[in-house]
Image 1 (spheres, rainbow, N blue to C red):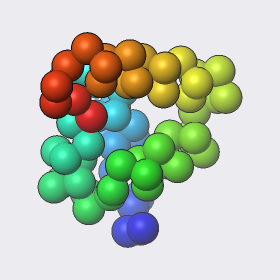
Image 2 (cartoon, one colour):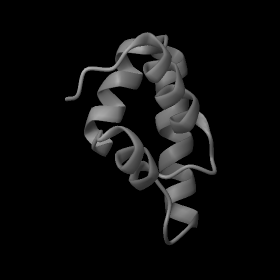
Image 3 (cartoon, rainbow, N blue to C red):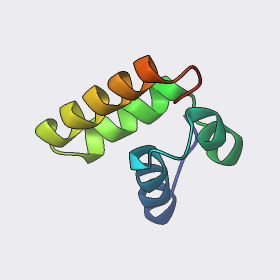
Length: 68
């Protein structure tokens, strides 16, 4: 996992929370795989916020052919 400063971590979190940014875009910009983004989100967010984010990502992925 690449070393990221606080500003980059905040940007990754913002991108991951966005419904308009895919994991592929995050990987292209920061070099983080989807599982690394999930681990970062798990560490950075409160447990309930992390669960809500994962639930939303899973639900949107089921509805769209290409998503996160």
